[in-house]
Length: 255
Image 1 (cartoon, rainbow, N blue to C red):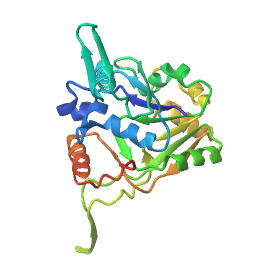
Image 2: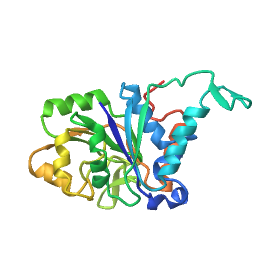
Image 3: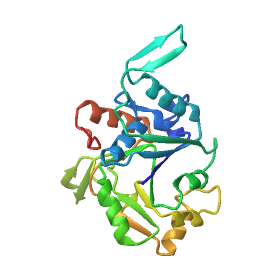
């Protein structure tokens, strides 16, 4: 099953990091967040990736080209003009990099990779969020649900501590609790090819297509109660790096 990753946005709310590179290439622990997302899927045996490029897409291409070339010891024969890797990469990844346009919206990017996923069920997520989603359970829930689309529903952490106050008396305090306002779109979709018929053109996937799928009873939710965090701001980046450097990154399900 292919994994589509939307990696073409400009990341304007993280402009401190994205002026020269796309947001999925911002580092967590000296590796791009995109790499972390791919490692997560790969841990469960999903190694065939289709990455939708846009803003500074050449940065992503260069990263993967260098990863292939520089991941092992090598012999450079100047006389023969050849470069030989001494060890193969220890990875089963197959990565298709597709330039889907500089300012194309998410739905439009998906339309442009339609031929790459073909007529089979595929997964899709955003290139700026990590989670400890159990991917096989997500896929099983999608199969059982029978809809064209399944979205992982999450409850993000609040930015600040929550006070429960009655008559000016604080009855309880919880530091950064999960939001009680409801569930939000956390990405980590499982999709059938029929979803492309719900994308009318260059539109935001999270607007018309998802709204139409929901109205037709073709969008189901997989509730994820555990860790999920997007990287929208510098504060988010610092938080994710702190988790990684402490050795307590919940999304690191691989060994």
